[in-house]
Image (cartoon, rainbow, N blue to C red):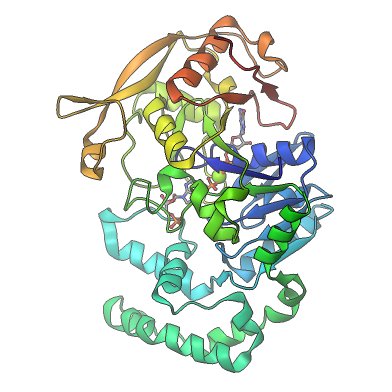
Length: 430
Ligand code: GDP
Ligand code: IMO
Ligand code: MG
């Protein structure tokens, strides 16, 4: 299985960190690669009861034996990168080797400044970004005024690029947002301060990964964010500024689509979302409160409460389709213990019309109300189960029904945050 993609099938925080860590521990994985997003991600890994969170670093950083790669599609804040590395070292983690693409775009402190002032300016219409500067860095990339990692190693070129990049931003900051303009010298100085530590990590990661695949090595692409946050396929404009879908792995890493063998969608047994935007199955009642509480649904990066709702099979089918999923990893099934009945959204009602697939427009999606099928629940604590057959019959039936509704095989189920709290699901018969 040389190239495996792990990605989020909903609105993020599905348990991609756990899935990546699990695969990196159980299989022989040579490379763990991030291809999109930046330190807006928050991936939790629980090893022997100890909790770790990765943001910009691939979760493989905790697995000695695999080389970690931050590929060209990621936006890299060197400050966040070093902070994260230092905090793991301070906890005594034996870090895996790390390689950073020379073509990755640099996220500087001014990107975070612009992210925050833009959100404030939008008021009630704000997107609820993580405030890390992700959108402004991708905007610079697309506007062709971005600064890439390789540019840091040529001071003269760097100064020219910073000047070009700040020209319009300073006008905006001063004249629209009523803020002080940024000093070019200070920005150049900030960026140069990262050079020495960054230099030994930088390489042509597309070449590295293609050669690794040629040599039969196994490469795991760890998704960040998720399908419904994809700038093309998500709930635009309430999305992130990158392409977390499977296709984004190719552009984000510089590998061709023919190299990918397996695409795993990580999906919660219910749904959560952080930030603004439509969410048809969102609950505002005691069930939503219970999911939030039992699921511990608080953001790893920003500490914001996640909005909670029931499983949405329309989203699951859509994710399967736009990503070409080969299988699903269903997480947090344990959270659903102790419900008499569990509703699952099978279609939407939009202005009296039933939609079995994602509506074509976002305005229709924003008006979609869920059509539920209700499945029998279970009361047993399942967090100690290690075989699919150990699950109560209704929990097994829930997984099998979701599998049918989602149109993709479920290969694994999470019954707790720990690495070992995972069950393999035998292929369904018939
Ligand atoms: P990611 O961003 O997709 O990596 O997910 P997050 O780490 O942001 O959020 C997932 C949360 O669920 C973390 O706190 C995980 O430790 C936790 N988690 C993952 N899988 C399971 C599971 O099967 N059961 C339970 N109870 N928690 C899980
Ligand atoms: P992981 O990898 C959940 C959301 C933000 C906001 C929108 C845009 O942990 O699943 P941005 O800062 O990216 O411009 O914010 O995207 N968002 C996430 N939500 N999990 C994430 O990452 C997210 N990364 C961004 O809350 O709604
Ligand atoms: Mg997360």
